[in-house]
Image 1 (tube, rainbow, N blue to C red):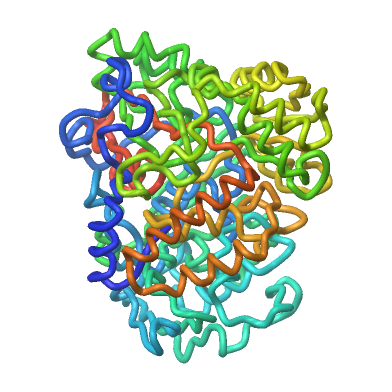
Image 2 (cartoon, rainbow, N blue to C red; image 1 turned 135 degrees about the vertical axis):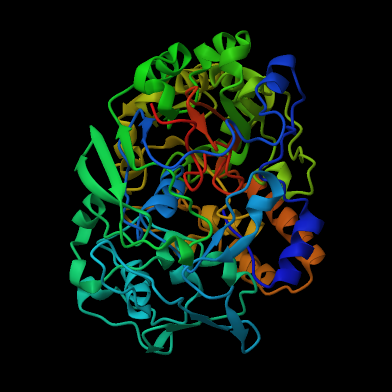
Amino acid sequence: MTRRTHVALAAAIAATLTLGLGACSSTGSGSSADEKSLTTAGDGIIGGTPVKGGTLHVLADQDFSDLDPTRNWVEPEMDFGIRTLYRTLTTFKAEPGAGGEQIVPDMATDLGEPSDGDKTWTFHLKDGLKYEDGSPIVAQDIKYNVERSFSPDLPGGPEYAKTYLDAPADYQGPLKGQDLPSTAIDTPDAKTIVFHLKRPVAEFGYTVTLPTFAPVPKAKEAGADYANHPFSSGPYKIQSYDRGKQLVLVRNTYWDQSTDPVRKAYPDKIVVDQTLSPTNVADRLIANQGDDQSAIAYADLDPSKVSSVITDPSVKARLVSENSNCDALLDMDTSKAPFNNQNLRLAVEYAIDKGAYQAAVGGPALADIATTLLPPEITGGTSVDHFKIPVGGDLDKAKQYLAAGGAPNGFSTTLTVASSEEQRAESLQASLKRVGINVTINAVDASVAYSVEGNKNTQTGLSVGGWCPDYPSASTFLPMMFDSRIITDTGNQGNVSRFNDPAVDAEMDRIAGLTDVTAANQAWQALDAKIMDEAPAVPLTWQKKPLLVGSNIAGAFAAPVWSAQIDYATVGLKSLK
Protein backbone atom coordinates (compact mmCIF):
# COMPACT_ATOMS: atom_id res chain seq x y z
CA MET A 1 0.00 0.00 0.00
CA THR A 2 2.07 3.11 -0.60
CA ARG A 3 3.16 6.28 -2.33
CA ARG A 4 5.32 9.22 -3.33
CA THR A 5 6.99 12.58 -2.64
CA HIS A 6 7.09 16.01 -4.25
CA VAL A 7 3.70 17.52 -5.02
CA ALA A 8 4.57 17.76 -8.72
CA LEU A 9 5.75 14.16 -8.84
CA ALA A 10 2.64 12.98 -6.98
CA ALA A 11 0.45 14.70 -9.53
CA ALA A 12 2.42 13.23 -12.41
CA ILE A 13 2.17 9.71 -11.03
CA ALA A 14 -1.52 10.09 -10.36
CA ALA A 15 -2.12 11.29 -13.91
CA THR A 16 0.07 8.64 -15.48
CA LEU A 17 -1.08 5.63 -13.51
CA THR A 18 -4.74 6.64 -13.09
CA LEU A 19 -4.46 5.81 -9.43
CA GLY A 20 -8.13 5.61 -8.42
CA LEU A 21 -7.94 3.64 -5.19
CA GLY A 22 -11.40 4.78 -4.20
CA ALA A 23 -12.94 4.64 -7.65
CA CYS A 24 -16.63 3.85 -7.68
CA SER A 25 -16.52 1.84 -10.91
CA SER A 26 -15.11 -1.65 -10.90
CA THR A 27 -12.58 -3.10 -13.30
CA GLY A 28 -11.77 -6.60 -14.36
CA SER A 29 -14.32 -9.31 -15.00
CA GLY A 30 -17.31 -7.19 -15.90
CA SER A 31 -20.22 -5.65 -14.03
CA SER A 32 -23.34 -7.44 -12.94
CA ALA A 33 -26.42 -5.72 -11.58
CA ASP A 34 -25.53 -6.86 -8.08
CA GLU A 35 -22.01 -5.53 -8.48
CA LYS A 36 -23.22 -2.11 -9.50
CA SER A 37 -25.76 -2.03 -6.72
CA LEU A 38 -23.07 -2.62 -4.11
CA THR A 39 -21.15 0.50 -5.05
CA THR A 40 -21.60 3.52 -2.80
CA ALA A 41 -23.56 6.19 -4.64
CA GLY A 42 -23.26 9.97 -4.77
CA ASP A 43 -20.30 11.54 -3.01
CA GLY A 44 -19.61 8.29 -1.15
CA ILE A 45 -20.35 9.81 2.29
CA ILE A 46 -23.18 8.39 4.39
CA GLY A 47 -25.20 10.47 6.82
CA GLY A 48 -23.78 13.97 6.43
CA THR A 49 -21.65 15.70 9.09
CA PRO A 50 -21.58 14.02 12.53
CA VAL A 51 -22.36 15.73 15.80
CA LYS A 52 -19.79 15.94 18.58
CA GLY A 53 -20.19 13.34 21.29
CA GLY A 54 -21.78 9.96 21.92
CA THR A 55 -20.43 6.43 21.63
CA LEU A 56 -19.44 4.83 18.34
CA HIS A 57 -19.77 1.04 18.38
CA VAL A 58 -17.55 -1.06 16.13
CA LEU A 59 -18.74 -4.62 15.49
CA ALA A 60 -15.78 -6.93 14.80
CA ASP A 61 -15.18 -10.60 14.17
CA GLN A 62 -11.62 -10.65 15.55
CA ASP A 63 -9.11 -9.03 17.83
CA PHE A 64 -6.48 -6.71 16.41
CA SER A 65 -3.39 -8.70 15.52
CA ASP A 66 -1.18 -5.82 16.70
CA LEU A 67 -1.84 -2.16 17.54
CA ASP A 68 1.84 -1.50 18.24
CA PRO A 69 2.69 1.11 15.55
CA THR A 70 5.98 -0.66 14.91
CA ARG A 71 4.12 -3.86 13.96
CA ASN A 72 0.84 -2.53 12.54
CA TRP A 73 0.84 -3.53 8.86
CA VAL A 74 -2.57 -5.13 8.42
CA GLU A 75 -5.79 -3.58 7.19
CA PRO A 76 -8.02 -2.30 8.67
CA GLU A 77 -5.75 -2.03 11.72
CA MET A 78 -3.55 0.66 10.13
CA ASP A 79 -6.58 2.84 9.42
CA PHE A 80 -7.88 2.35 12.96
CA GLY A 81 -4.55 2.92 14.72
CA ILE A 82 -3.41 5.91 12.67
CA ARG A 83 -6.74 7.71 12.87
CA THR A 84 -7.41 7.14 16.59
CA LEU A 85 -4.30 6.30 18.65
CA TYR A 86 -1.20 7.65 16.94
CA ARG A 87 -0.13 10.31 14.51
CA THR A 88 2.54 10.16 11.82
CA LEU A 89 4.77 12.76 10.16
CA THR A 90 2.39 13.09 7.21
CA THR A 91 -1.00 11.55 6.61
CA PHE A 92 -3.73 11.29 4.00
CA LYS A 93 -6.66 13.67 3.76
CA ALA A 94 -9.92 12.33 5.17
CA GLU A 95 -11.92 12.49 1.93
CA PRO A 96 -13.51 9.93 -0.39
CA GLY A 97 -12.15 9.41 -3.89
CA ALA A 98 -9.11 11.14 -5.35
CA GLY A 99 -8.99 13.76 -2.60
CA GLY A 100 -8.22 11.07 -0.05
CA GLU A 101 -5.09 10.06 -1.97
CA GLN A 102 -3.40 13.38 -1.20
CA ILE A 103 -0.99 13.71 1.70
CA VAL A 104 -0.91 16.59 4.13
CA PRO A 105 1.33 17.38 7.10
CA ASP A 106 0.36 15.59 10.31
CA MET A 107 2.92 16.00 13.10
CA ALA A 108 5.29 17.65 10.64
CA THR A 109 4.99 21.26 9.52
CA ASP A 110 5.22 20.31 5.84
CA LEU A 111 5.63 17.31 3.53
CA GLY A 112 9.37 17.08 4.14
CA GLU A 113 12.41 18.86 2.76
CA PRO A 114 14.39 16.65 0.35
CA SER A 115 18.06 17.24 -0.38
CA ASP A 116 21.05 15.35 -1.74
CA GLY A 117 19.00 14.19 -4.72
CA ASP A 118 16.14 12.85 -2.53
CA LYS A 119 18.52 10.79 -0.36
CA THR A 120 18.11 13.08 2.68
CA TRP A 121 14.74 14.10 4.09
CA THR A 122 14.22 16.64 6.88
CA PHE A 123 11.01 17.10 8.87
CA HIS A 124 10.20 19.69 11.53
CA LEU A 125 7.54 19.03 14.19
CA LYS A 126 4.62 21.34 14.90
CA ASP A 127 4.29 23.17 18.21
CA GLY A 128 1.90 21.81 20.84
CA LEU A 129 2.13 18.06 20.13
CA LYS A 130 1.43 16.04 23.29
CA TYR A 131 0.89 12.49 24.52
CA GLU A 132 -2.07 11.28 26.55
CA ASP A 133 -0.38 12.36 29.81
CA GLY A 134 0.39 15.87 28.57
CA SER A 135 4.10 15.27 28.00
CA PRO A 136 5.57 16.71 24.77
CA ILE A 137 6.16 14.63 21.65
CA VAL A 138 9.76 15.05 20.49
CA ALA A 139 11.67 14.01 17.38
CA GLN A 140 13.67 11.46 19.35
CA ASP A 141 10.42 9.53 19.99
CA ILE A 142 9.84 9.13 16.26
CA LYS A 143 13.44 8.02 15.82
CA TYR A 144 12.94 5.48 18.61
CA ASN A 145 9.89 3.94 16.94
CA VAL A 146 11.75 3.67 13.63
CA GLU A 147 14.60 1.97 15.51
CA ARG A 148 12.13 -0.50 17.02
CA SER A 149 11.06 -1.55 13.51
CA PHE A 150 14.49 -3.19 13.07
CA SER A 151 14.00 -5.40 16.12
CA PRO A 152 13.73 -9.16 15.50
CA ASP A 153 11.65 -9.29 18.71
CA LEU A 154 8.99 -7.02 17.14
CA PRO A 155 8.39 -8.62 13.74
CA GLY A 156 5.65 -8.08 11.21
CA GLY A 157 5.64 -4.33 10.67
CA PRO A 158 6.27 -2.19 7.59
CA GLU A 159 9.66 -2.88 6.01
CA TYR A 160 10.32 0.55 4.52
CA ALA A 161 12.70 1.84 7.19
CA LYS A 162 14.84 -1.29 6.87
CA THR A 163 14.75 -1.04 3.09
CA TYR A 164 15.38 2.69 2.71
CA LEU A 165 17.53 3.90 5.63
CA ASP A 166 21.32 3.94 5.46
CA ALA A 167 21.56 1.76 8.55
CA PRO A 168 24.26 -0.79 9.48
CA ALA A 169 23.52 -4.22 8.01
CA ASP A 170 23.66 -5.85 11.45
CA TYR A 171 21.51 -3.28 13.25
CA GLN A 172 18.83 -4.96 15.42
CA GLY A 173 17.20 -2.10 17.29
CA PRO A 174 17.02 -0.69 20.81
CA LEU A 175 15.70 -3.86 22.44
CA LYS A 176 19.15 -5.29 21.67
CA GLY A 177 20.77 -2.23 23.24
CA GLN A 178 21.71 -0.64 19.92
CA ASP A 179 21.22 2.97 18.83
CA LEU A 180 20.75 3.84 15.19
CA PRO A 181 23.67 6.10 14.20
CA SER A 182 23.12 9.66 13.02
CA THR A 183 24.26 8.56 9.57
CA ALA A 184 20.82 6.92 9.29
CA ILE A 185 18.62 9.24 11.40
CA ASP A 186 19.70 12.47 12.99
CA THR A 187 17.68 14.44 15.57
CA PRO A 188 19.64 17.69 16.00
CA ASP A 189 16.96 19.06 18.31
CA ALA A 190 13.60 18.09 19.83
CA LYS A 191 11.65 19.30 16.80
CA THR A 192 13.82 18.16 13.90
CA ILE A 193 14.34 14.69 12.42
CA VAL A 194 16.56 13.96 9.42
CA PHE A 195 16.43 10.66 7.51
CA HIS A 196 19.45 9.54 5.46
CA LEU A 197 18.57 6.99 2.78
CA LYS A 198 20.65 4.43 0.87
CA ARG A 199 19.27 5.67 -2.43
CA PRO A 200 16.95 8.39 -3.70
CA VAL A 201 13.32 7.90 -2.68
CA ALA A 202 11.22 10.60 -4.29
CA GLU A 203 8.04 9.41 -2.54
CA PHE A 204 9.45 9.38 0.99
CA GLY A 205 6.91 12.01 2.01
CA TYR A 206 4.31 9.30 1.46
CA THR A 207 6.37 6.63 3.20
CA VAL A 208 6.20 8.55 6.49
CA THR A 209 2.40 8.22 6.52
CA LEU A 210 2.98 4.67 7.82
CA PRO A 211 2.76 3.81 11.54
CA THR A 212 6.52 3.15 11.67
CA PHE A 213 6.82 6.93 11.70
CA ALA A 214 4.57 7.50 14.72
CA PRO A 215 6.18 8.44 18.05
CA VAL A 216 6.91 5.95 20.83
CA PRO A 217 8.60 7.31 23.98
CA LYS A 218 11.45 5.10 25.14
CA ALA A 219 10.21 5.33 28.74
CA LYS A 220 7.01 3.51 27.73
CA GLU A 221 8.76 0.59 26.06
CA ALA A 222 7.07 -2.73 26.89
CA GLY A 223 8.38 -4.94 24.10
CA ALA A 224 5.75 -7.21 22.61
CA ASP A 225 3.28 -6.05 25.29
CA TYR A 226 3.29 -2.48 23.98
CA ALA A 227 0.46 -3.55 21.65
CA ASN A 228 -1.82 -3.83 24.68
CA HIS A 229 -1.55 -0.10 25.39
CA PRO A 230 0.17 2.05 22.77
CA PHE A 231 0.84 5.43 24.37
CA SER A 232 -1.50 7.78 22.56
CA SER A 233 -0.42 10.71 20.42
CA GLY A 234 -3.81 10.76 18.67
CA PRO A 235 -7.29 11.97 19.63
CA TYR A 236 -8.15 8.85 21.66
CA LYS A 237 -6.48 6.76 24.34
CA ILE A 238 -7.15 3.26 25.59
CA GLN A 239 -9.46 3.08 28.62
CA SER A 240 -9.58 -0.73 28.64
CA TYR A 241 -8.50 -3.57 26.37
CA ASP A 242 -9.60 -7.15 27.04
CA ARG A 243 -7.86 -8.96 24.20
CA GLY A 244 -10.26 -10.82 21.95
CA LYS A 245 -13.27 -9.35 23.71
CA GLN A 246 -13.48 -5.58 23.85
CA LEU A 247 -11.44 -2.42 23.29
CA VAL A 248 -12.68 0.88 24.71
CA LEU A 249 -11.22 4.21 23.62
CA VAL A 250 -11.94 7.56 25.27
CA ARG A 251 -10.77 11.05 24.45
CA ASN A 252 -7.13 12.02 24.82
CA THR A 253 -7.74 15.41 26.42
CA TYR A 254 -4.21 16.59 25.51
CA TRP A 255 -4.78 16.11 21.77
CA ASP A 256 -5.10 19.56 20.19
CA GLN A 257 -7.42 19.87 17.17
CA SER A 258 -5.56 23.01 16.09
CA THR A 259 -2.48 20.88 15.32
CA ASP A 260 -4.52 18.22 13.50
CA PRO A 261 -6.85 19.34 10.69
CA VAL A 262 -7.48 15.75 9.50
CA ARG A 263 -8.89 13.87 12.51
CA LYS A 264 -12.23 15.27 13.64
CA ALA A 265 -12.67 12.94 16.66
CA TYR A 266 -16.45 13.28 16.74
CA PRO A 267 -17.39 10.48 19.21
CA ASP A 268 -16.57 10.79 22.91
CA LYS A 269 -16.00 7.05 23.12
CA ILE A 270 -15.32 4.17 20.71
CA VAL A 271 -16.24 0.63 21.80
CA VAL A 272 -14.99 -2.28 19.70
CA ASP A 273 -16.82 -5.59 20.24
CA GLN A 274 -14.49 -8.38 19.05
CA THR A 275 -16.65 -11.39 19.92
CA LEU A 276 -18.89 -11.61 16.85
CA SER A 277 -18.96 -13.56 13.60
CA PRO A 278 -19.40 -11.85 10.20
CA THR A 279 -22.95 -13.23 10.13
CA ASN A 280 -23.67 -11.76 13.59
CA VAL A 281 -22.35 -8.39 12.48
CA ALA A 282 -24.48 -8.37 9.34
CA ASP A 283 -27.64 -9.54 11.13
CA ARG A 284 -27.32 -6.88 13.82
CA LEU A 285 -26.71 -4.04 11.39
CA ILE A 286 -29.50 -5.15 9.08
CA ALA A 287 -31.87 -5.28 12.09
CA ASN A 288 -30.60 -1.83 13.17
CA GLN A 289 -31.81 -1.88 16.79
CA GLY A 290 -30.65 0.00 19.90
CA ASP A 291 -26.90 0.71 20.08
CA ASP A 292 -26.45 -0.98 16.71
CA GLN A 293 -27.98 2.11 15.11
CA SER A 294 -24.76 3.86 16.21
CA ALA A 295 -22.49 1.05 15.02
CA ILE A 296 -20.26 0.34 12.05
CA ALA A 297 -18.95 -2.97 10.74
CA TYR A 298 -15.30 -3.89 11.10
CA ALA A 299 -16.02 -7.20 9.37
CA ASP A 300 -16.80 -7.32 5.65
CA LEU A 301 -20.38 -8.05 4.73
CA ASP A 302 -20.91 -11.81 4.85
CA PRO A 303 -21.49 -13.10 1.28
CA SER A 304 -24.65 -14.87 2.37
CA LYS A 305 -26.16 -11.49 3.32
CA VAL A 306 -25.62 -9.72 0.00
CA SER A 307 -29.15 -10.34 -1.28
CA SER A 308 -30.67 -9.18 2.02
CA VAL A 309 -28.84 -5.87 1.66
CA ILE A 310 -29.37 -5.06 -2.00
CA THR A 311 -33.09 -5.90 -1.97
CA ASP A 312 -33.91 -3.59 0.95
CA PRO A 313 -33.42 0.08 0.03
CA SER A 314 -33.27 1.19 3.67
CA VAL A 315 -30.37 -1.20 4.33
CA LYS A 316 -28.64 -0.64 1.00
CA ALA A 317 -28.54 3.09 1.81
CA ARG A 318 -26.36 2.22 4.81
CA LEU A 319 -23.74 0.32 2.81
CA VAL A 320 -20.22 1.63 2.25
CA SER A 321 -18.68 -0.34 -0.62
CA GLU A 322 -15.83 0.56 -2.93
CA ASN A 323 -13.03 -1.23 -4.77
CA SER A 324 -10.26 -1.89 -2.30
CA ASN A 325 -7.38 -2.14 -4.80
CA CYS A 326 -6.26 -5.26 -2.94
CA ASP A 327 -5.27 -8.68 -4.27
CA ALA A 328 -6.47 -11.93 -2.77
CA LEU A 329 -3.62 -14.39 -3.30
CA LEU A 330 -2.90 -18.07 -2.98
CA ASP A 331 0.69 -17.98 -1.71
CA MET A 332 3.00 -20.96 -2.15
CA ASP A 333 6.01 -21.49 0.14
CA THR A 334 8.72 -21.57 -2.49
CA SER A 335 11.46 -22.32 0.04
CA LYS A 336 10.61 -26.01 0.33
CA ALA A 337 9.02 -28.92 -1.52
CA PRO A 338 6.78 -29.22 -3.38
CA PHE A 339 6.64 -25.51 -4.22
CA ASN A 340 10.36 -25.04 -4.71
CA ASN A 341 9.53 -26.57 -8.11
CA GLN A 342 8.39 -23.92 -10.61
CA ASN A 343 6.49 -26.43 -12.73
CA LEU A 344 4.41 -27.56 -9.76
CA ARG A 345 3.63 -23.95 -8.93
CA LEU A 346 2.46 -23.39 -12.50
CA ALA A 347 0.31 -26.51 -12.22
CA VAL A 348 -1.51 -24.85 -9.32
CA GLU A 349 -1.83 -21.63 -11.34
CA TYR A 350 -3.57 -23.43 -14.21
CA ALA A 351 -5.70 -25.73 -12.04
CA ILE A 352 -7.48 -23.06 -9.98
CA ASP A 353 -11.12 -22.39 -10.81
CA LYS A 354 -11.18 -18.64 -10.13
CA GLY A 355 -14.87 -18.47 -10.93
CA ALA A 356 -15.58 -20.87 -8.06
CA TYR A 357 -13.39 -18.84 -5.74
CA GLN A 358 -15.12 -15.63 -6.79
CA ALA A 359 -18.49 -17.26 -6.03
CA ALA A 360 -17.21 -18.36 -2.61
CA VAL A 361 -16.36 -14.78 -1.66
CA GLY A 362 -19.74 -13.45 -2.79
CA GLY A 363 -19.56 -13.29 -6.58
CA PRO A 364 -18.87 -10.26 -8.77
CA ALA A 365 -20.69 -8.06 -6.27
CA LEU A 366 -17.77 -8.48 -3.87
CA ALA A 367 -14.78 -9.30 -6.07
CA ASP A 368 -13.42 -9.18 -9.61
CA ILE A 369 -11.34 -12.07 -10.96
CA ALA A 370 -7.63 -11.20 -10.84
CA THR A 371 -5.50 -12.00 -13.85
CA THR A 372 -2.18 -10.54 -12.75
CA LEU A 373 -0.54 -9.37 -9.53
CA LEU A 374 -0.82 -5.59 -9.94
CA PRO A 375 -4.44 -4.42 -9.65
CA PRO A 376 -5.94 -2.35 -12.49
CA GLU A 377 -5.67 0.91 -10.56
CA ILE A 378 -1.88 0.54 -10.72
CA THR A 379 -1.79 -0.56 -14.38
CA GLY A 380 -3.47 2.48 -15.87
CA GLY A 381 -7.03 1.50 -14.99
CA THR A 382 -7.16 -1.54 -17.29
CA SER A 383 -6.67 -5.09 -16.06
CA VAL A 384 -3.86 -7.17 -17.57
CA ASP A 385 -4.57 -10.83 -18.37
CA HIS A 386 -1.11 -12.39 -18.26
CA PHE A 387 -1.72 -16.12 -18.81
CA LYS A 388 -5.16 -15.90 -20.45
CA ILE A 389 -6.28 -18.96 -18.52
CA PRO A 390 -10.05 -19.68 -18.72
CA VAL A 391 -11.94 -18.64 -15.59
CA GLY A 392 -12.52 -22.31 -14.68
CA GLY A 393 -8.84 -23.22 -15.15
CA ASP A 394 -6.99 -25.24 -17.79
CA LEU A 395 -6.75 -28.79 -16.45
CA ASP A 396 -4.84 -30.20 -19.41
CA LYS A 397 -2.13 -27.56 -19.05
CA ALA A 398 -2.04 -28.10 -15.28
CA LYS A 399 -1.45 -31.83 -15.82
CA GLN A 400 1.34 -31.07 -18.28
CA TYR A 401 3.08 -28.97 -15.64
CA LEU A 402 2.59 -31.71 -13.04
CA ALA A 403 4.30 -34.18 -15.34
CA ALA A 404 7.11 -31.74 -16.10
CA GLY A 405 7.57 -31.23 -12.36
CA GLY A 406 7.91 -34.96 -11.70
CA ALA A 407 4.48 -35.41 -10.12
CA PRO A 408 2.22 -36.71 -12.92
CA ASN A 409 -0.25 -38.12 -10.41
CA GLY A 410 -0.31 -34.99 -8.28
CA PHE A 411 0.85 -34.48 -4.69
CA SER A 412 -0.44 -33.56 -1.24
CA THR A 413 -0.08 -30.28 0.63
CA THR A 414 -1.74 -28.20 3.37
CA LEU A 415 -3.55 -24.88 3.05
CA THR A 416 -3.69 -22.50 6.04
CA VAL A 417 -6.53 -19.98 6.22
CA ALA A 418 -8.36 -17.97 8.83
CA SER A 419 -11.33 -19.98 10.10
CA SER A 420 -13.73 -17.35 8.73
CA GLU A 421 -12.41 -18.09 5.23
CA GLU A 422 -12.84 -21.85 5.28
CA GLN A 423 -15.57 -21.84 2.63
CA ARG A 424 -13.34 -20.11 0.10
CA ALA A 425 -10.52 -22.52 1.02
CA GLU A 426 -12.82 -25.41 0.18
CA SER A 427 -13.33 -23.98 -3.33
CA LEU A 428 -9.55 -24.03 -3.83
CA GLN A 429 -9.35 -27.53 -2.41
CA ALA A 430 -11.95 -28.74 -4.92
CA SER A 431 -10.18 -27.00 -7.82
CA LEU A 432 -6.86 -28.63 -7.12
CA LYS A 433 -8.32 -32.08 -6.46
CA ARG A 434 -9.37 -32.20 -10.12
CA VAL A 435 -5.73 -32.69 -11.14
CA GLY A 436 -4.67 -34.89 -8.22
CA ILE A 437 -3.41 -32.17 -5.85
CA ASN A 438 -4.83 -33.17 -2.48
CA VAL A 439 -5.19 -30.29 -0.06
CA THR A 440 -5.72 -30.50 3.70
CA ILE A 441 -7.24 -27.30 5.12
CA ASN A 442 -5.68 -25.91 8.30
CA ALA A 443 -8.21 -23.36 9.60
CA VAL A 444 -6.89 -21.13 12.40
CA ASP A 445 -8.25 -18.17 14.34
CA ALA A 446 -8.02 -14.96 12.32
CA SER A 447 -6.01 -13.18 15.03
CA VAL A 448 -3.13 -15.69 14.70
CA ALA A 449 -3.31 -16.50 10.98
CA TYR A 450 -0.54 -14.06 10.07
CA SER A 451 1.70 -15.44 12.82
CA VAL A 452 1.26 -19.02 11.59
CA GLU A 453 1.79 -18.11 7.94
CA GLY A 454 4.75 -15.85 8.73
CA ASN A 455 6.74 -18.42 10.72
CA LYS A 456 8.96 -20.64 8.57
CA ASN A 457 8.46 -23.54 11.00
CA THR A 458 4.65 -23.41 11.00
CA GLN A 459 4.00 -22.13 7.48
CA THR A 460 2.28 -24.68 5.28
CA GLY A 461 2.71 -25.18 1.54
CA LEU A 462 -0.29 -22.98 0.70
CA SER A 463 -1.91 -20.02 2.42
CA VAL A 464 -4.60 -17.55 1.45
CA GLY A 465 -3.59 -13.97 1.96
CA GLY A 466 -3.49 -10.78 0.03
CA TRP A 467 -1.84 -7.44 -0.44
CA CYS A 468 -2.96 -3.84 -0.59
CA PRO A 469 -0.71 -0.97 -1.70
CA ASP A 470 0.44 1.18 1.22
CA TYR A 471 -0.18 4.08 -1.14
CA PRO A 472 -1.03 4.06 -4.88
CA SER A 473 2.35 3.01 -6.28
CA ALA A 474 3.70 -0.28 -7.63
CA SER A 475 6.76 0.35 -5.45
CA THR A 476 4.59 -0.54 -2.46
CA PHE A 477 3.25 -3.66 -4.11
CA LEU A 478 5.81 -5.90 -5.81
CA PRO A 479 8.80 -5.15 -3.52
CA MET A 480 6.71 -5.77 -0.42
CA MET A 481 5.45 -9.06 -1.85
CA PHE A 482 8.50 -10.53 -3.57
CA ASP A 483 11.76 -8.87 -2.48
CA SER A 484 13.81 -11.69 -0.92
CA ARG A 485 15.69 -9.26 1.32
CA ILE A 486 12.66 -8.65 3.53
CA ILE A 487 12.05 -12.33 4.33
CA THR A 488 12.26 -13.14 8.05
CA ASP A 489 12.03 -16.44 9.89
CA THR A 490 9.09 -15.18 11.99
CA GLY A 491 6.64 -12.33 11.51
CA ASN A 492 7.13 -12.60 7.76
CA GLN A 493 4.14 -10.60 6.49
CA GLY A 494 5.58 -9.23 3.27
CA ASN A 495 7.14 -11.90 1.07
CA VAL A 496 4.88 -14.70 2.34
CA SER A 497 5.84 -17.01 -0.53
CA ARG A 498 9.51 -16.68 0.54
CA PHE A 499 10.29 -16.05 -3.12
CA ASN A 500 14.01 -15.56 -3.76
CA ASP A 501 15.22 -14.42 -7.18
CA PRO A 502 18.28 -12.12 -7.13
CA ALA A 503 17.46 -10.93 -10.66
CA VAL A 504 14.04 -9.75 -9.46
CA ASP A 505 15.63 -8.00 -6.47
CA ALA A 506 18.10 -6.22 -8.75
CA GLU A 507 15.35 -5.11 -11.13
CA MET A 508 13.35 -3.70 -8.22
CA ASP A 509 16.35 -1.59 -7.24
CA ARG A 510 16.81 -0.41 -10.83
CA ILE A 511 13.18 0.62 -11.21
CA ALA A 512 13.21 2.40 -7.84
CA GLY A 513 15.96 4.68 -9.16
CA LEU A 514 14.06 5.71 -12.29
CA THR A 515 12.93 9.33 -12.35
CA ASP A 516 10.79 8.98 -15.48
CA VAL A 517 7.34 8.02 -14.21
CA THR A 518 6.19 6.46 -17.48
CA ALA A 519 9.35 4.35 -17.77
CA ALA A 520 9.00 3.21 -14.17
CA ASN A 521 5.38 2.25 -14.70
CA GLN A 522 6.23 0.20 -17.78
CA ALA A 523 9.12 -1.47 -15.96
CA TRP A 524 6.95 -2.43 -12.99
CA GLN A 525 4.43 -4.04 -15.34
CA ALA A 526 7.19 -5.97 -17.11
CA LEU A 527 8.48 -7.16 -13.74
CA ASP A 528 4.95 -8.17 -12.78
CA ALA A 529 4.89 -10.42 -15.87
CA LYS A 530 8.27 -11.96 -15.00
CA ILE A 531 7.13 -12.79 -11.46
CA MET A 532 3.86 -14.22 -12.77
CA ASP A 533 5.90 -16.60 -14.98
CA GLU A 534 7.76 -17.83 -11.90
CA ALA A 535 4.39 -18.29 -10.13
CA PRO A 536 5.19 -17.85 -6.44
CA ALA A 537 1.54 -16.90 -5.86
CA VAL A 538 -1.75 -17.14 -7.73
CA PRO A 539 -3.72 -13.87 -7.93
CA LEU A 540 -7.32 -14.89 -7.22
CA THR A 541 -9.50 -11.79 -7.00
CA TRP A 542 -9.35 -8.04 -6.76
CA GLN A 543 -11.52 -7.36 -3.77
CA LYS A 544 -14.25 -4.93 -2.90
CA LYS A 545 -14.89 -3.77 0.65
CA PRO A 546 -18.60 -3.90 1.65
CA LEU A 547 -19.27 -2.51 5.13
CA LEU A 548 -22.65 -1.84 6.75
CA VAL A 549 -23.34 0.99 9.17
CA GLY A 550 -26.24 1.80 11.48
CA SER A 551 -28.91 4.39 10.74
CA ASN A 552 -27.46 6.86 13.30
CA ILE A 553 -24.03 6.93 11.63
CA ALA A 554 -22.74 10.00 9.80
CA GLY A 555 -19.50 10.84 7.99
CA ALA A 556 -18.86 7.25 6.88
CA PHE A 557 -16.98 6.67 3.64
CA ALA A 558 -14.40 4.31 2.18
CA ALA A 559 -10.85 5.54 2.75
CA PRO A 560 -9.20 5.26 -0.68
CA VAL A 561 -5.73 4.54 0.68
CA TRP A 562 -6.66 2.01 3.35
CA SER A 563 -8.24 -0.70 1.21
CA ALA A 564 -11.63 1.07 1.25
CA GLN A 565 -12.08 0.75 5.01
CA ILE A 566 -14.30 3.30 6.75
CA ASP A 567 -12.14 6.29 7.64
CA TYR A 568 -12.12 6.60 11.43
CA ALA A 569 -10.93 10.21 11.15
CA THR A 570 -14.40 11.52 10.33
CA VAL A 571 -17.01 8.92 11.26
CA GLY A 572 -19.44 9.67 14.08
CA LEU A 573 -23.12 9.88 15.02
CA LYS A 574 -25.98 11.76 13.37
CA SER A 575 -27.53 12.61 16.70
CA LEU A 576 -27.08 12.00 20.40
CA LYS A 577 -29.72 9.61 21.73
